[in-house]
Amino acid sequence: MQKIYVIANKIRQYVLPIAIVLGLLLHEYCAAFNVVVPYIIFTILLLTFTAVDITKLRFKPLFVWIILFQVVVSLGSYALLKALGANEIIAEGILVGILCPVAASVAVVSTMLGADRETVTSYAIIGNLMVSIVAPVYFSFIGVNQEMPFLDSFLQILRRIGTVIGLPFFLALGLQLLWPKANRVISRYKGLAFYLWAVALFLTLGQTIHFIFLNGKGNWSSIGWLGISALLFCIVQFGLGKWIGHKYGDTIAGGQLMGQKNSAMGIWMANHYLHPLASVYLAFYSVLQNLFNSWQLWRKDHKKGRP
Image (cartoon, rainbow, N blue to C red):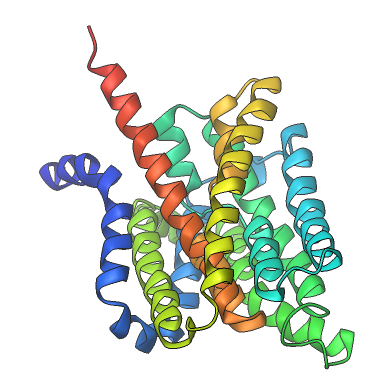
């Protein structure tokens, strides 16, 4: 078992790039597993939340700036682009890309890079709960549910997103308070969250790529602009996050919490509530953020090896 653990740690930095390549190669088969993705995301969050003492987590000033960026800049960018006459697909892609919650595996990558575990885990919970409330509000008047009455649309979306994001938190909290033994058993497998995220990434990327092959004709300009936008915001979010994090004593945490997105969750939201091609933004972003994270992990390991 120890030998397997050592091997897993060595290949960890290559898991996400492998998931991306497999998504490109096997996209035709990924569409058949669309229904599985929400259950994988639910499991990832449950494993993440049971691994920490939720009652000891604290809200930190750093979180205010990250939440404001996600909530205000996402809607502001959408409104500005629409006012300038931009394509709806591009506007929706940037909206969901910025609003997209922080990755469930952020604690794994961030702590490997040297961030404070309590900080990143606290925001992983707070940020995901925030999106489970804000996303239904936005998607009730943006996307495919605009014709529905606001309250009906909000409750329908809240039920689906809240079940995937919010329910794992309350389940973990209940286990910790009422059945701690079961919580300890589940938390032993917290390391699986990273690899489950890679599976979810592989499936959602494959589904998006398959959709591009089927419906991309005539939309290549929008797809190109989504790619450029993803690159721009990837640089902005990691850079701005690191700058803000430095002000609060944890540069790595700031960058990862603002820049590392749960792209599988974002692609799923876009496919269900917006124009499906909007998910291309997150497909591009996923590739970019994972290349950057792989480079960060390699750089840290390289520095450790120096005399």
